[in-house]
Structures are given as C-alpha cells and as structure tokens.
Length: 166
Image (cartoon, rainbow, N blue to C red; front, side, top):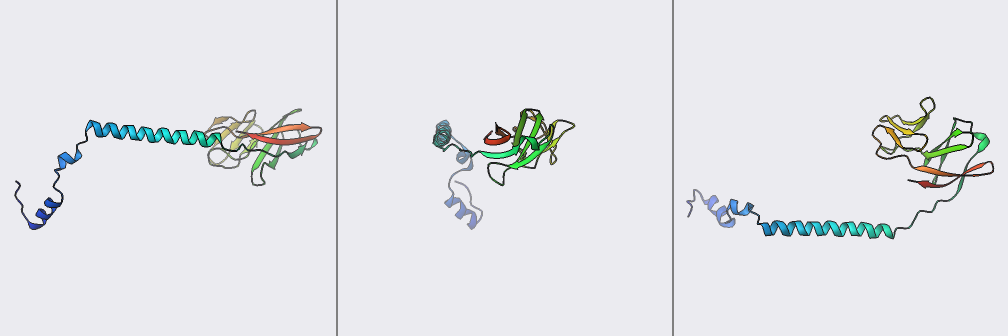
C-alpha cells in the first residue's frame, strides 16, 4: 500500500481509487463497440436525410413577365426580381434571339454580380469571383458553385421567367 503524506491526499485517494494507467486503457471490445455504434448513428442520420428529401414538396414557380424584347439591345442588361421581390436577377441579351438570366447573388457570399461587357463575364466585386455568361459556371475565384439559372420563355414580344434551375 502507498504511503499517505497528508490528510487531503488520503481523502483524494479514497474517493478515486482507480489507477491512472488503468483508467486510460481502452479494450478492443470497447473500441469496436464505439465504432459500430457511431457508424450506425451516422447511417441512421443519412437514411433520415434521404427520407426527408423524398417527401419534401417540390417548389412550384409562378410565371412572371420579365421584359419586352424591344427593351433590351444586344449586349445590354435588364435587372428584375424573381421569384420573390427580394430575389434580384440579371438578364443579358447575348445575341439577336438569345437571352440568359441568372440570380444576381454570388454563390460565395451573396454579393451582387454585374455584367462586364468587355470581358463577357459576370463579376463579383467582393472577392473577385467570375462567372461565364453562357452557362453561369465559375470561371475564377472563390465561388463554390455556378449561379442559379432563371429559365426564360418567349411568348411573342414578351420574355417570361418560368422557374429556376440550380
């Protein structure tokens, strides 16, 4: 038995009689049980996410007139909001019969992007993120994904937004 130097050490020794080396030892059985339980917990969490996404209602977008064809010249920009008034979007007429529209929020930190005509790209001034005008893909910078595309439909002289493609 160990010698006790003081009364406080004796109280401590009595309350915590486990040796430090034995306390830190983890058996293979305990470690395997921990790994199995953790893996099962992660698996159940992934199944929960999958089931939750299967039953999530799909978003239905309303059609909204965006512009008249005569309003926008080739290489010009029209700003609009879609699907809600707080959702800023940018539309660019790239050719006589070709229009593209994207969300105006940068996918990095939601700064507003603008069209740079000379470089033919969409630019985010906050952190120098650049997007392709043709498909909204990231050309350079920190944005992690392309800009959401606003789906446009032409009816006569009207351009109508019909949905958003992520």
